[in-house]
Length: 271
Image (cartoon, rainbow, N blue to C red; front, side, top):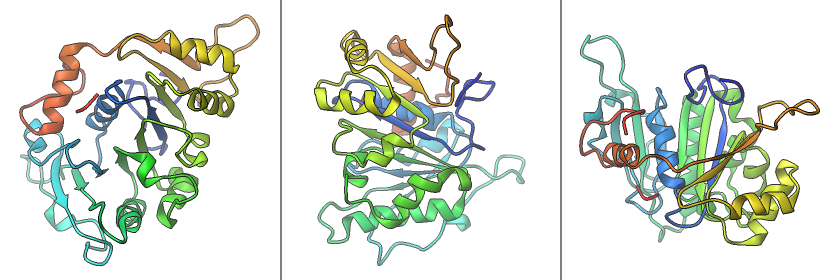
């Protein structure tokens, strides 16, 4: 598949992509982000700001990743990837991928630095994914900490893919939108947010407005910045309207995220 996906329709881990999933609460963005994580074959850092989005410990039962959970502050957290906790597959040789799930304390005086510490670990670890469940909190406009700024500018050089979820674009640092390779747009009611996206991707604001308003429940637009601009007379596939994910697929992703039962990408969270 052309653009940001590999031949199997998965994110290409070798590229290091930035993926933005934006939409109002329960519009579908979180389940999309979890589905992308489920299909990622290497290690993942999850910044679970709300503390209940997952993937949770127990997701290793799905056969995909082992989940290690961290809590603490920048002063107490480990300084590097917990490689000593990695297990192997049944052959005893092949390492299993890990999910490092961090639940920050919003009352911590070093709240942003705590989350940023995990970003620094991911950037040093290389070839991994970072999943932000509330990117508006961790990548707030004008308050982006050092490791996160480095990620937004140089992630591809470290093969670090980032999946950023949030209800707004206007309150998120502009670099997150400007650097995005893929933008999943779900129901988005605030005109300023729609205008910000249209301006960044070079789309006519009125056309983009109409496209977003035309979305049904859990439907979405997908913009792929890596697809070429079409020649005159050819359809423009850089932005496409997609139907909602099938209910059985959503249930499978939710089970995987909660660590409840086996589920693999392609079988069948807060939306």
